[in-house]
Length: 385
View 1 (cartoon, rainbow, N blue to C red):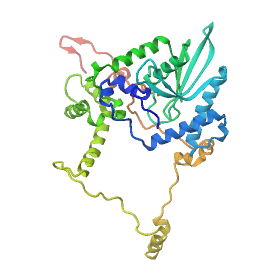
View 2: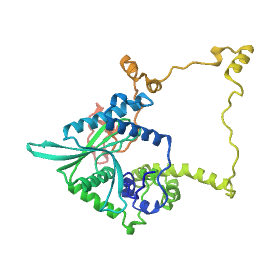
View 3: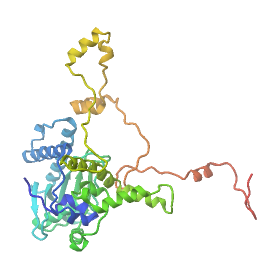
View 4: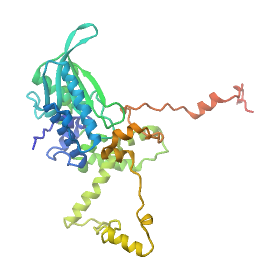
């Protein structure tokens, strides 16, 4: 079992956004395992094995999607390695000596020289972080996790001309690769920010947001409970600066959703322990109806009663995604019979890499399109027809 560091790089986005969570989550452990986490662990294991052995052709992923994602990541790292002098670090755990309780495992690090704007060549330390998750893309710019790994690498391997980081996230919207350059000043600023965020004076500084999804203390957080109660009282169409209220609610939405999902589980555990909650009780839930005998027996009984195979066992074409997971991704891509329709506007954070929709005020659009001339002003106001 790998050691869990309180200042682990993966937790720092949460700590920087909500300093109080650093203290509130002490001793509560990390997030629980899930099928998604296990899937990500498998993808990382396959990738590190391929990088160690240089046997990408023997990669044996459980499905075509993981195969393609891991291959893309490994090929990207191998291309970086070919630029250098034969040094690389794969899945290396680094432990800080200059910052207490800071440590973590970096996916891939290498170094090489490059020419920069007709200046003398400079040394580049390049970190690659493989993220197999699906959904919202993680931005590279000013990313506390990447800066933590780069700070650890600088402490261990020395100073470089530039510190480069790439997030390889092939299952999110937009390009798989997102790369940023950092300087020694950036790493020093990150160190100062970490010191400030974990200072005991900030134990009471809380902020609800997307970071609450990964906070071990979210289910017992008084601040999050208060934010949820305040959200329930907001009138969405009334009051001054209503737009600010919308933005505030959207920021807190992931945290509120997590809390509301967690509460029923905690209540059930409480009742299962034999304790009482006013107004609530436990009952045996019932699942969907299903056949009590084998499919063959069901079909025989249905046929005897005039319900044939065509009526009782409808067949359905698999979706492109289902066929891709079954190993036919390359085939269906070559047939050019797949489309991805636009489903209309949807809300995403500014960090999303997709192009935003340019919207116009309908009043302005009507005014520009109107063939009516501007009407003269009168003492009583603008003239009307």
